Length: 195
Image 1 (cartoon, rainbow, N blue to C red):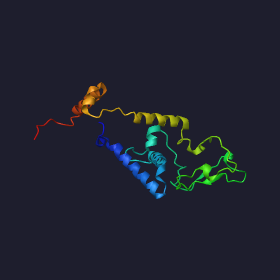
Image 2 (cartoon, rainbow, N blue to C red):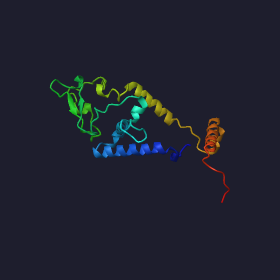
Image 3 (spheres, rainbow, N blue to C red):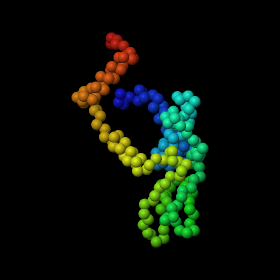
Image 4 (cartoon, rainbow, N blue to C red):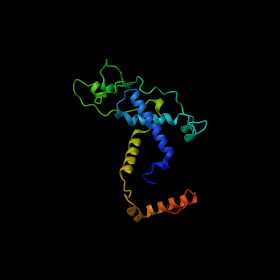
């Protein structure tokens, strides 16, 4: 039923666990809140590759894909990391990578830290994930298109705002009938007189 999170106990509890992890990871490493989407993705990735009580003797990822996931490449969240500087964005004696621990500045990016002296405009950067994260990073164009489609679905909210609107739509009447039928068949209620 719409707007009744009480009926989604398992998913609501998982969301609470996930958000607690995200809050802890952001605060523990002083990561700016603007990185919360990346932290949610990483926390979900870790949870799906960690043992749980709901799936005995295997991880959720293993239950889903029938493949035992490798976690040998996991690093401590917020650990020292280096970002590769493409050839086009560095000079001959410039370092090939830069320390990526400085995430506290909202305006810091690769172009600012390695600006060119002749102010030439550089072409778009080609991103290629390292081999060890292939099972985590998917095709970026497809992923972006998929995210856009999901956003359109969530933004296109034409749910009725009251019972009178819902009753006029056949889809909602059918959903209500199915819900009542389910409640009756599961015997989750009994009719009593008003007190």
